[in-house]
Image (cartoon, rainbow over all chains, first blue to last red; front, side, top):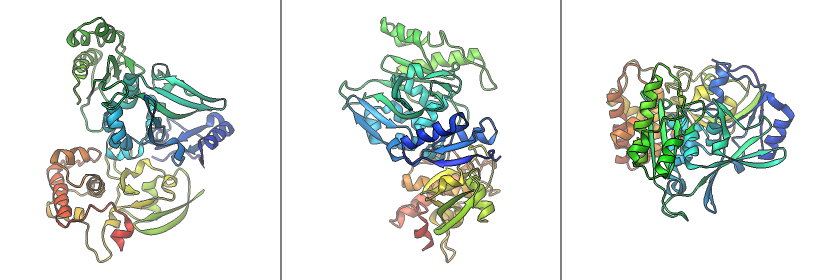
Amino acid sequence: MIPASFDYEVAESAEHALSLLAEHGEDAKLLAGGHSLLPMMKVRLAQPAVLIDIARVAELSGIRIEGDEVVIGATTRHAELAGSDLLKAEAPVLAYAAAQVGDPQIRHRGTIGGSLAHADPSADLPMALLALGGSLEITGPSGVRVVGADDFFVGPFESVLGPDELLSAVRVPRGGPNSPGGTVPWGYQKFVRRANDWAIVGVAAYGGRVALASMGGTPLRATATEEALKSGASIEEAARLAAEGTSPGYDFHADVDYREHLARVLTKRALEGKTG
Amino acid sequence: MTQIKLTVNGGARSDEVEPRLLLIHYLRETLGLRAANVGCDTTSCGACTVLLDGESVKSCTVLAVQANDRSVTTTEGLVAEDGTMSAVQEAFRENHGLQCGFCTPGMVMAATSLLAENPHPTEQEVREGLEGNFCRCTGYHNIVQSVLGAAEKLSGTGSSASTGSSTEVNA
């Protein structure tokens, strides 16, 4: 399968990428690792007239501490997140989540910004960011705006990112042993049947926040579970409420009942701090 | 058309390509390097795995223009000029790490990248490290043994796994 023809532009800077976006409008798409976009272009689910390559823009990549947050450039690749000692120390749930994406080859190419902008409700990083209560730095023609993970995802493969905007960085709270607030307990569960597949159901827990993958059109908070925990319920009691308010779909892997059951079981494990 | 300049198996290349040309097709059709195979064509099977700046990637999901200014290594590039195979290739031969052979170039490149990142993997780490490569003959046992054998060879000689830094392997 070969993508339809397009023009190829290389952005020299974030500002250059924005001006190229302004020039080409809705016909343009940003290309970083291309591991969500290129497969869609090959099957003609996406047919942009122009690709703007931002993978070589140095200012969009890297992991650094800023106050009580870790700031991650949008084109930082999954392998860099998974292998970063800084991230493993300060936001281990995100480093762990990045190591669960796809397979080694995919992690060598795919980027955190690409995965978040793609907004797949079954993907690892959107769920992890939602559990962390992180935020997204979006650069547009009128400057930078910061959107919380709770407000970023609006539907399957749909976010609040505008066609003239660039997701430039991701911010997550520090929650490791050296962090200002100390260690925040976390757990991560991803249920798959096949190697390098998306989660049939996924659960990420961070402190009192619980996020679910593949339980609706966007990554979702398990709000009933979170409320129960706040009111002093046990993990077991709270986990029983994990599927409340969700709207999972069905496919040949799992029906709705099974996904709801998995959400409860996996939420319990995630809240117990388990990974797998 | 877009001009690209890159290093392939140690040699400098410069070509005019359509932006939509996939790296796998550039390697196979433009350069005639047929080791990397097109399998699933959907970033799943790993038969098209090559090294991009020393790291394993699935070349069915990389545009040739994305390899501009970078270094690409295919299985052909692992063989020294005198025909000596790399430690990973040799280990696959010794351990009979192939059946039909279709997945083998991808397996060898994924293993080369894995051993560069983790020179002393456990069996479990090898299995997880090859998660992106399917063997439809299901010959995984010997493939895993091959990678473990290659790790032993490489640590035995005191050298680290070649990342396919092509100038080295072709020197």
